Image (tube, rainbow, N blue to C red; front, side, top):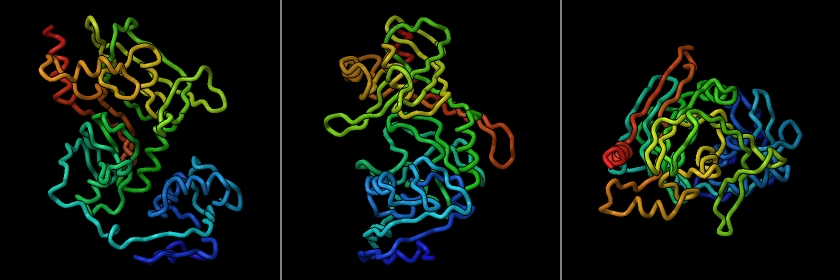
Length: 334
């Protein structure tokens, strides 16, 4: 059996003439196989890794496997011959201290760290972003030997973001997400006057690519073969003549779920540049206008979870960002 660690040789192109097999240990138990491969093959494009999975070139216990599979201790992962490039320059590249973002830490212990993510900051690097939240925190805290995102927030969404500081904590928190025992609530300001005090919305979603190659999500009628069931509970908090403030509780955690559900119902989120009312967004962002809104009004307000080590219930809350507070005050004064 060949250890995957033998394929690393900094600064050289390495043709693998034979497949590499790794036996999964407890440190990787519960991790999705696509994330496992992305982490192991850091300089291989993600698109190529997913192609290897789709084509069956990656095998798990001698069988084909999809990217959603969660690894178990003792699994044998076979990685086919791959031509990799490991760059000693890129591996040594560090974020300079002058580029550090100061995050408001809501909670931290040996199992997890919870930050109030500011708007406009991606949770991870990619798509033209060199350093997202996780890269920032890894650079700022090299003493943290393990750090992984528990969940994600869209770039323009602010609020509570969870990161695990151990593999065991990550596995347990992912279990809570799948089981629905972790409760996540958001605040969203939408165009229009919402009528129902509380409304359950269950609409299936599907992903697609625009003609320019941008990834988007849309509602489909019924959970067909390509549909993902998505359930959101909306509670009306306050309404104005042209806007409504809603609390959105996620019962499932699909990509862009809140944004797409609201847009489909005819209540797009103010400032949403993908699914919103673009003419309204332009007007709201116009300088000199009171109140002015230059970002999407979506904020991850609270997360409730069971601490992965102590078993105690944690309630984590991020105060509404200042610019969103100011916009609401402007609505109140009109």
